[in-house]
Amino acid sequence: MGAASAAAEHRRRLVALAYPVYFELLSGVMAGIINMVWVARLGGEAVAAVAVAGNVENLLLGVILVAGSGTTVLVARARGAQDPAAMRAALRGGWALWAIVTPVVAIGGYECREPLARLVLGGTGGGPVPLAAGYFSIALPGIAVFFATNVVDGMLKGADDTRTPMRLALLANGLILALDPLLILGFGLGVRGAAISTVLGRTAALACGLAALRRNGVLRQAAGAAPSRKTSLRADLRRTAATGLPMSADFVARMTGSLALVAVVARIGVDQAAYGIATKAMYFATMAFYAVRQAAAIHTAHLLGAGRAQRRAIGGQALLLAGALGLSAALALLAAGPWVMRALGSGGEVAEAGALYLRCSGPYLVLLACFIALGGVFEGSGGSPTLARITLCGVVLQLAFAYGLSGAGLPGICSAMAISMALQCAAVVRMYARTERPKDTGHGSGRSKDPVRAPGGTAPVGRPAR
Image (cartoon, rainbow, N blue to C red; front, side, top):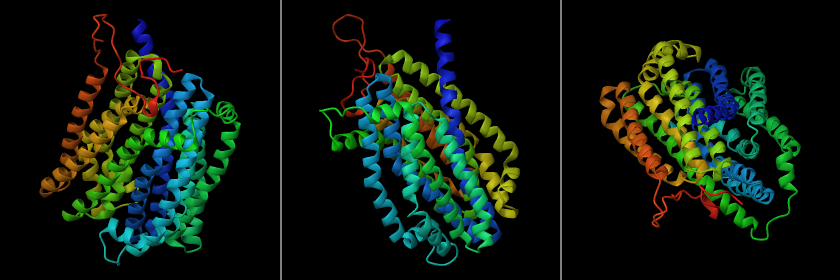
């Protein structure tokens, strides 16, 4: 009864943390979909440009996850240890990383906007390439706002507040919904108008997020705490980077693989717009998996000193939730694939190709859900570097399988994705079982040591944080 009660409490906590994260992430997806719906009135080239530009932005999200996710985990650990000085160090490290990463991406991306557009669209200068470059000319400088919002969200989530980031995302999305028709069609700005409305909506959300930071009692106490004598800004930055980099690498590798599949899909003659729209539709499911992952990471980090049994219980409940979500998504897309494509503004051959892709993606989605959810436990407990390596190898295998099976069309592409993800799941389950298996201390006491350590020299997971 005690174990069942503990499992139910973990599940309840994961759901409470995850559902606001899901709506926050979904709101970001919806911003891209809203943009595509309005630019669809400008033609297929405009849709392709905005769809692929949105994929690039998702890739760049992985870059700032170094600061955002790293800060979330470190703040959650400090909160669990009731250590305001450590929390203050985590906040400083997050902002320091933002200040370093943002100029490189914003300025470098703007200067390389045209080569970037040609790269992701596989063009030489015509078609949707100039449109994508125009979108990038606004969106990439505006990435500074997007990155700052991500860091603010990470701080709030680490302090156990996932609802405020959800509200901020909904605010940004509501403004985009109102501004898109005005700027895209009313002022005739086209795809540039979509980029402008996105940046303006996010700017308003960032202003509200900064105000929320000042109102948060936990973070306000940390900001006023005396700094530790053993730490410096450089040390805080390194600690945040060490914690967040594997999470960022994991996400960037998966998004890079998704972008690289565009070339394979184009090789078999499928319209890029169909692939782009179908990928957006799948985000409705995958964002739920990432929400469970974030919840598992926050919950695990907060209970860092609670020991192996607690971590196993969190992992089991995360798998249960994500597996149910993955199966539900697979069945929904199997039944409603054509309707989903039409709802997102496509028709004709584009809708048919996208619906086929969605219907074949079910096994991949179920496996992806389990892999992503279990990854949250590793992120919270310091095991994400190995997880990132598994993801990187899986993406390479996915592209190789996709190229080899591309002769079977879209079903072959989906089969390649499922095979690769099955191998990744097998690897992470083996890693999880080995990490969680009790080990003898070598002194015959029967007590076990916990081999997992948090990055940055913190205490072993099985010992109480000080």
